[in-house]
Image: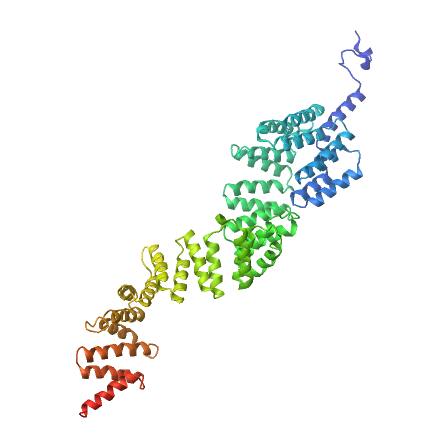
Length: 553
């Protein structure tokens, strides 16, 4: 057979085709390979999904709606609109878009994938699988866009993770430079709960390499390291995302969260301010910024946001709580009290913390509601008995109210949580014992205080007073050594300590006169009193009686 004379079009074996037809077939194959991802890489579609990524969904949806309006018969654009609607939580609208896409092209693999995606979200796995299989069937599993769409649908249910990974690996062999393929692979590996943590990061890094202007991979890498508490790398990744796209809102939000955990309040505030300036859907972030302002001690700005947040009848108890805290710090005491009352009314009893009652107690002290403050401190201590500051305030407030037994109990609790009592503890409980007329206990506390603080006068003075009450007849002279020790310290500044020095001289003079029967010795003490206070009645009376006696009556 002379093959050169056989018409190529009539060749039954198909071994020969015309050059023109060969060219057409090659072009068609190339078109299929490229068009598989045309719309995903379309600048308009990418721009629309960027808006969704940076939390500006209204702009993203509007851009896609305009694309659909300008191209009403384009089924692919309807799929991307539906996908955007799914990502923004509008499931019913998404389903309508996918069905409309199928009405334009009954062989649209993308829209079958979209319908399957919706069915999986509805937990209708049977219909979902049928729709997704149809998507692969009509596209012959060679369309990268469809492979991605089906894989993304499968990612909504972890039992299909391996199916998703297999499809994405197939897509990668068709087009290894598609950043979205690598992103979805990273998402799939991430859902395997750290089984492939390294491969997750590698996939996101490949996505970043495939499109250096794509901020999302760096953000995703940051999330992985943030979850692993490797915060320096997380921060670096978020900063890379922001360097690529200064409007990448989620990166600012996560930076704010990291800075909060690091107690870098000013940085947390700055990051959240930038986040809120970009995001259309901040959710609880506005409240979070108010909390960061509170943490940064910018109570005015915190309260401005809290005021807006707390007007909502469905406001969370947590928002009421921190608004009350912040108002307290700003000394807006009446407003703070009202906010605390709203909080205590709305919060579940088990959610109210020791800190809440402690804060409220401090506020009540500012409002001069001392008895109510003690009630609040008692509730706080019942929840956490190891709060030194609150136990101190609790005891001090009882002491101020002359509720000495209650003060003693509070100070005992305070001292029980210390390894060794502080000087302040001994001073506090010593006074409570003293004013409750428990003089031996007071003497013990003040004597310990004098030992701890030998250069301070107060321990000696109050120990002397306690001993004077124990030995009220002065018969044993118990107070004498302590008053003498007090004078050794106090005489270095007689003007400052004049009243207490006179008290010490008075005791020593009386003891010397009445117990020791030493008139001249007593006279020396009373002369010292008159040197400090010439009008002192006790000393003047002594001197007058002494003069009478010396004159014989």
